[in-house]
Image (cartoon, rainbow, N blue to C red):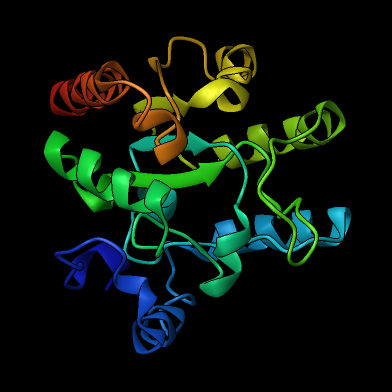
Length: 211
């Protein structure tokens, strides 16, 4: 049984509950995550930094939609997951936008353009530096190699959007959709930001329905 076959939370920020975090970690040995965990182990060893787990309730290597964010935020350490269920504003926005688009969890893998934690313990959130982005680029190809069913990629924000050429080279013809980053810092600046995210995810949902 894969993670997506299990009941999914019906509200945002469900991983604020330590019991929910423990229950989620009990699922990380699932087969649909195993190749991703090996890649994460490699990145962790090469970069000497934590790499949060992919969410077992999402699609793992069976996902048809890759949603690329920027880098794990400092709050990720509370759960050690890249998840729409994390107790953060960004995750809550993702939970809402993906739900509104009608995109099944089993179809999604949420990953980061720079997949390791770049912040020192206790430091404030910051954008990845140019050197960190360069160091992360070689990991995108191996990630895509693990996703044989991939039908569309959604790039959230400037850093993820910068990987569009890499995606085009690795997967020619793959539909790639750019949307703003779902952080409240951006979403709250203008209603147009939320509208662009919703429109991009609606486009991705249409690709999934047609594929």
